[in-house]
Length: 246
Figure 1 (cartoon, rainbow, N blue to C red):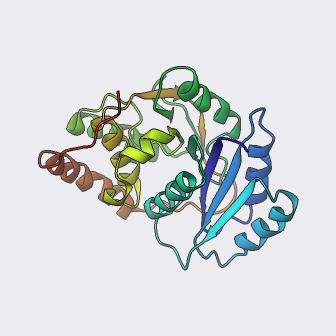
Figure 2: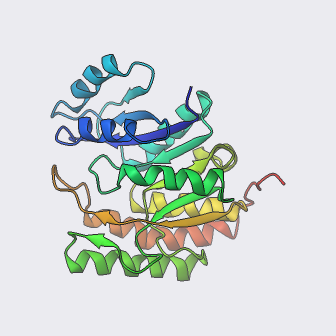
């Protein structure tokens, strides 16, 4: 059995889902894939089920009743990963904005370079974003600057969604206390891991905007992130975070 699980949330990803699964399985390291499927009306789940006959020991799926949010999808996946004994757990989008070839680099950061959380970072070595309009690049870049200023977490790409966690991180950070669902979820996970004493390491990647399918981004997600950061900071003053074991 592989110790590596890649969690991919999906909603209407029929154009990408087979290609992304095969790309993950074609990596030099062995990865398993868990799809968290939120009731896509386009038949995404049917495609995954057909692939499960080809990869019965490597491809898994949890189907949920409707679009319940990115954050709750990942929390569901994290709990599934812990129940099934995985040591390294990855977050990745279905649309190839995250390159599967970078998965071994994130793994290496956690397995061999001392990181507890490895972050696929768009901004740690400049601005490495392809095919985004400049307005969105600037919004994302300065959002990360804002988060870093408010929360004091020394990370260039605070909203990144391409990550690897060591098992101990997910066991420690009290998943049921994670509250946010959109961009703020990614911020909250990093901030909580940081407050628990874990080591976060950024790995430079090139982020390429999706070519197929429809983006799930909305203005409300950015709004949640903006106000959520202040809420996270205030709440942290009244909370005792569990600590990483020495």
